[in-house]
Amino acid sequence: MEKFRETLKVRKERAALVAATLKRTRGGDNLAELTALAESAGAVVVDRFQQKIAQIKPKTYIGKGKVEELAERLKRFNVDVVIFDNDLSPAQIRELEKALGAKVLDRSELILDIFATRARTRQARLQVELAQLEYTYPRLTRMWGHLDTVAGAGGGTTAGAVGAIGTRGPGEKQLEIDRRLVGKRLIELRRELAAIDRRRIREIEGREGMFKISLVGYTNAGKSTLMNALTDAGAVVEDRLFATLDTRTRKWMPQRGVEVLVSDTVGFVRDLPHQLVASFKATLEETVHADLLLHVVDVANPEALRQVEAVEGVLHEIGCADKPTVLVLNKVDDVRGLAALEMLRTMVPQAIALSARTGYGLDKLREAIVERFCGMDLRICVRVEQANGKVLSFLRAHGRIVDERYEGQAVVVDVRLGSNQLPELKRLRPDSMEIWSGHETAAGIGMRDE
Image 1 (cartoon, rainbow, N blue to C red):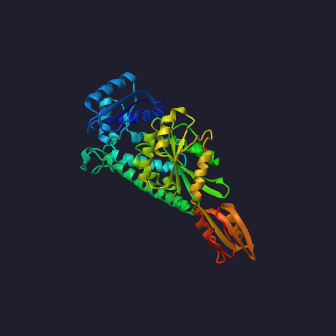
Image 2: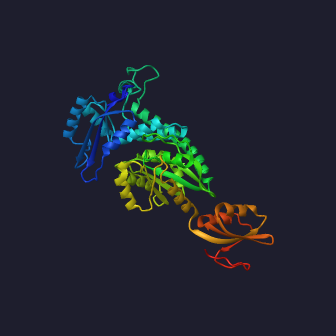
Image 3: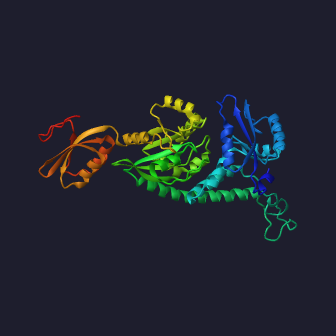
């Protein structure tokens, strides 16, 4: 098994893709996504192999006959690596590599490899390394046969034992050394990331009082393009999977008096490895602490409905399943997405259809966000001293003034304000300020309901 992983190769590897699904499982085009993942990792896909199985074989996942058929195809197409769209056990990988004569990767290892190539910041690199080591640790095998033991033959300690003076002893297998080194590195990474997590969480909590929006969605759904369209963030936009690993947060004013924070987060994928969800916990904190989620869906993708389910699964895993969400149907300018678009519009009538690339539908999204930001429209009256510029400025910036009247040293303002903005107004409240419903009569002034 090890010889396939010890050879350093610069050329693009020729890959064969295998998707084995249980007969009772609702199917989809798993190989289409696996192809995109493999190409993102730098492989050239030369063969695809899909099979429905009644049950998972403990030894090789797929049946013996299919393994033999697959081995013949690998020779025919001169394949370097076989990539399974399944999570395989270490024993299954070992047996498959022995039978197929080629390197075997499973879905999780492929995704981890892509994340490793995309990581740019120190935090992202640490997160990916932690996820890779957590995946590798239970899969460690002896990689170096010549270092099987540190001591002499049989670990003997007699005078005739093989080994130089100072090296003889009971012996220690290289696998045990590897596990100890990996375990030590895991502790170091967790400690370093914990410090970064604490700083990130303090930073997020320091935004208390700001309305926070988090863009979530399947990888390559167009979140970064939408982020740029809304905020001019200058986020990197590429037509590839997992182009964005680091969270980017920007201020945005959808209308006068409404200021929010928008965060672009790492994209999700079906069967996202649990190691990645755990190691990217600090990055996903932006989503956990958000007041509103914009779930961006690529309606041009034929698997759009399955992608929605996958994203909802990850959101449930991180505790965000019940968070207020607006479904954003992106890429409506692509006619291939008409069927999925109509289906999702029927399922979620409040969904907003737009094209982040062309700008179509962005106005409707702005209106929806302003409505969520402001809440139910309230009409209130506020009496405050004329010298209190802070309160008057807030009312003029965030509300719609119906009437404004002076009474000696005070001002009575009849204003329409969002219910979500009322707590912020009350935080500015001095002892001399009074607030009451705009439908009532106060100080001899009749307030009309419009």
